Image (cartoon, rainbow, N blue to C red; front, side, top):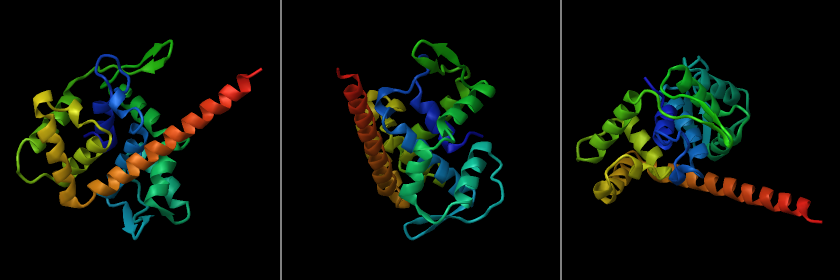
Length: 219
């Protein structure tokens, strides 16, 4: 079974080109960080206390990426959810890289080196096809949605990826349903705020680095 972070990543990657689709370029790092925190929460490893996120159980989660994050959190002082979202999006743990490597080892993706860097085209379509089917079914009706699928829909929506899952004619209705599904759990607004805010901080940092680089090149 794929983790939430792996499911989000598969939808965010173009099947043939193997690169992140433009809609998710800015938000994917923060979205993956949120997905990892949600995965740990679903496994009973994290506890929300006010604005803080605490390790509730130190036992390994049985997932190498999640266990690395859990160890990092366990040895850190008390921090806010927003702090951990930013930390995991920017950390040297390289959550995205580790997830991609694992999907390559499982032969879900392949890795190809290009002049602009590595890309990860799809090798086995079945896992992503199942993800898309579950999401479309949840968005196409009014039936109750299980907690895990609800979290995935909130993540996809926060990364502007709902349009990648449904047909163009269904996008408006699917987007409205996605917000409603997220609101049922009370997490939609919080995740959108955190992911959007972190993405904006990352964009500002990139702009700053570009300006610094331009100054260095000036005669």
